[in-house]
Image (tube, rainbow, N blue to C red; front, side, top):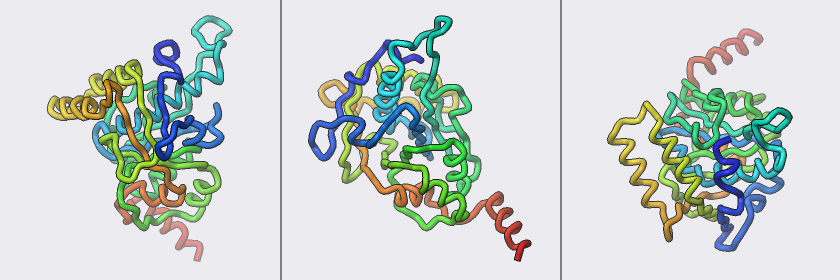
Length: 248
């Protein structure tokens, strides 16, 4: 719980369509049972969703104050926030309170069905996807219906921290950004060149000394078409189809 005492919900500023807002305006009905999932497709890409993640986790901890702590009888808990790394692990998000490590989920096949299965298996209720062109994915009917039934809202984000046609703006705080930078620095799979590029990218997001990221609200249906640009089923999904054909 690196962030419990280092920052608070009041350290973040929210705008919706240019007007001051709350996290609950962006994620209506946000509560302590929500499970946020971010689909990450490139090295360091998850940093582009950090303002949303960090502000949401401070709001999560607010539900449990003043009982949080490490002492016997105290509430020691982390939010159910997950990073879905497509293809391979793209960064370590430890200092952003994505913990324990099993919440950094690697989906080895860049296959919409496999990505959505991983999302469903973690019971995600709020979904963030990279701002890519919607595709025409192939899903099992059961997988698709499960997601539609459960996911409440979705946002498009950019690895750069700024999306086109944004309607959501979140201004972060110094403590939150320090955790983002620390996560970048401990990620062993980043080259020195990429590390420098990511740090520079974060610096360019500063407005009056504070990092500001933008997002775009999208329908859940659209988000499910933005999990990947790949539309071809992978080996695992093809094996499902083979089983279904045996029933005919």
